[in-house]
Image 1 (cartoon, rainbow, N blue to C red):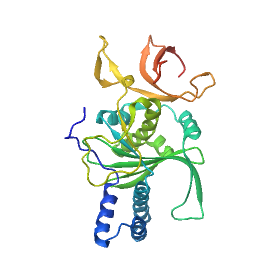
Image 2 (tube, rainbow, N blue to C red):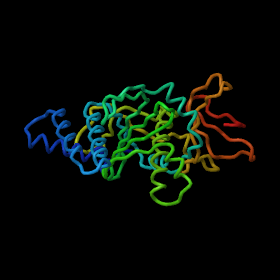
Image 3 (cartoon, one colour):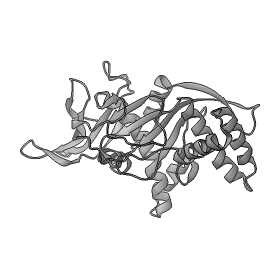
Image 4 (tube, one colour):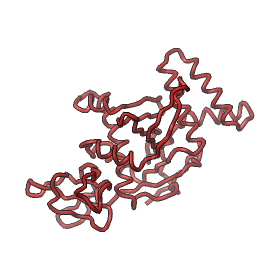
Length: 292
């Protein structure tokens, strides 16, 4: 149930506040003029790392201003935490194939070398999380060499995570490595969740949203929790926590009717040999499902 007390995080807040201040100071509504001014500022930063961080923040904001970002409003923070911490990444190859077949294929010129043009598959997503301060937006890219990279902007700055970096840090225990692993895993799992459980995706902004910094003019969706990831007790009642598992794209020709679909595989062993796989359509349970 929605409550008027819910406060959502605001992605790209810093750049939106800068734009609003610029409008008042310059008595102008020209977003392109602001973009050009802020871009010149990014080039004045003392290091290339700082220049790239400011430029990435600015580019994200400009895309958001034009309505290119998909805004995802989590109805429950528990789902956000679940996709970050409790859903494993078993492999990426089948998901890459799914993205290549179903994603948006784009071309874009390099920010610092316009003569170079990249072709890639991209998903731009801005997150709104209940009762969380930090805003977060990311661009999920399938690159020409068939690797995944995630470019992100939060209240503290900007950065990127390539799948090679994810593979390097996922066995480490330090906090920085855990953050890299968690952020990469979340971005992949979010896309998989929305494809796996489309019945949990609803258009619109929660009525409890009372943010005044800006109202996104892009597409807004509300994301709820699927019953398929909620743990069941021995009596059949739903428990307050969610079941651990992972997403899998059915890429084998073995799956004649469901090939190409993303499913959620529960980490529940049956007699130590097989797993129960929940689907998001009428054919929900496939018992003794082996070699997922």
